[in-house]
Image (cartoon, rainbow, N blue to C red; front, side, top):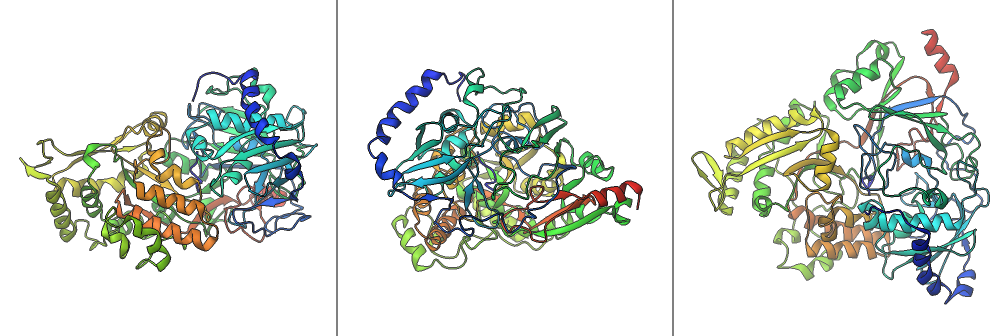
Length: 627
């Protein structure tokens, strides 16, 4: 996505909150009458286009009468902020410290909720609607009186203002980056919360703010917000934390009388009584657990397993179903990312030499059963990906940087070379050798050395072993170039800490942007993010041209202008050779024990699982009978 987003050590005091609100309230009082004259809107989007009108009853892709009950269990397919795929030791998933449990977002309500069949639309949840000033810098969210926390206390505007302000100041660095143009929030009574934004703010900043979690101000008056803790926070969402064992599993229990269950933006969703996340540090153990029915749903990310292992008895006799679902969202970028903060990776010719040494065609054929296509772009599988020569609109954006960016930016975009599939393409290795010599890295005593005579060595950092086979041939080819490369496998907690501190040479990462990218571009590609520990800019990209093109994309006033800006940005990013592109598949490979039912329509921009599925009692009973 993205769906990858994202410190201090003292709790926010009541006095801090008052100081935060004082200046903001003074600014707001300058135009209260004008703001009240603005119409109330039931939804918002980046460009103002909404599919669902006021008064709609439910999203088209749900079953509004879906029954409630049953269990959904899985290995979590995605994470946000400090969440970890392989383990957890904290229930605070909105700060940098700790490794949080996946799924904690289920326990918190937000002001508005997304529609998964639109690229970026939001509709009222804790807020019934919003009034937006004519200059679009002030948003007044109107809260529902029935919205409550799990202890029965009302969600007030004071809680919302507290939540937005503390996340901006002390939340995970990704949240802080994405709220750069959010100036602050204050309550004008219990039912209205005001959010203010900077001029020229990113079009998606108000959308991001409207989907931040709502915390209880009273709860955190006695708790340290910055603490990595296993204490269960007071929530406000459709689920609350149930049983858990750190590092093994966590269950979320459906709040049976949740105030938002029948609202249009949530009707027909959150249907399971229990949503459970399992954690396995080894993928093989995780797969075996699925075949033994230790959990019920699995999205398969390993092509070898998908091609060779789904022949166990329960699948052959129909108790387990196997499907491939289309994925129409941008596939984004997966690959080996160079840490360009380190001197040895400064020259893009070295980075291109390392790209030439990776034989994707052999790897795809031999290790991955031909299941993938090669990734070229950070906007892969979308119309924002640059193809061919730049259009007139792209050239207009790129011309100011002529002479400051590689000349190739004004021609066809960089595409990783296609090998002969032998595993050791001599032509590509000769090209890599020439590039290394051009940089001044020569062979001395059989080793590639820099200008100081120091050998070039590379460490690949991993947190689980499934990627090790993909490194073996690559490391062999690097050895043929005189470069000593090794794999360092560390535990998930150490891995997260090292990546957050940018303490690595090269590591595997995957990220993707939404169909309407905005301020999130900064967290992955900007100079500011490159200098922010815990950010998603693993490569350390710090390029003024990229920063300027990000600003152009964020300022685009139409979807067509956004597409043009992203294509121009894509050309410059690809010209930088910041990563060795991996592969992608525009699909979800899923398998599940046959105890579920689901709507006829899958939402275009999401998997919709488990949000729209439900427990089928008849199927479950049949499975238990062995029928």
